[in-house]
Length: 193
Image (cartoon, rainbow, N blue to C red; front, side):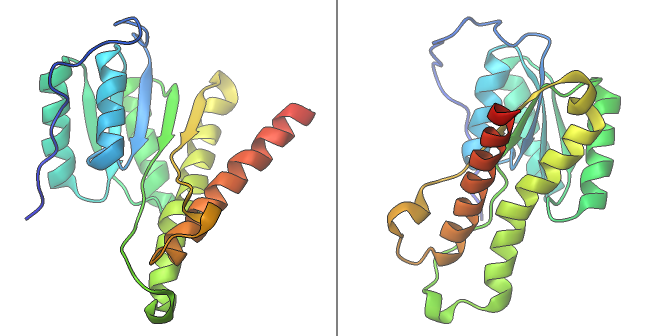
């Protein structure tokens, strides 16, 4: 049985409490882990959120916790970052309910410990599809549907597993390297235009 998420007790504000009032964040993987806490911190600073993940039961539970702790609106939407048609539907629903998306947090990830020698083709492919392809898929849909005409911010959550190599993480290190390289290349293209 999975341990339910918990909000930060006695949250201390570093930034102005209303810094993000009127903004909306779309957070992939927002039902658990790092992205649950990212959604919470955004909400504590006045941002409303849409959290997306594959399990609606977990999404609803997390959205309820976040709204209770912060007093902000949190809309749970079921979606798989590997499936563009689901992303399009989710972004359309988010825009219908919230009217805007100002911040995209790409945090959905798949990971497990496995030695490279016993890693199946499908296991490697699945992690790449969730982490690397999912980051691109969601960014493209949010850009096409809203950011292209209104602007916005994309934050890709990654790790440095590939920098020195991490035991039992060949698949995750490869996916995280792809995310980091994509962000770096995009930044170069933006700076050169």
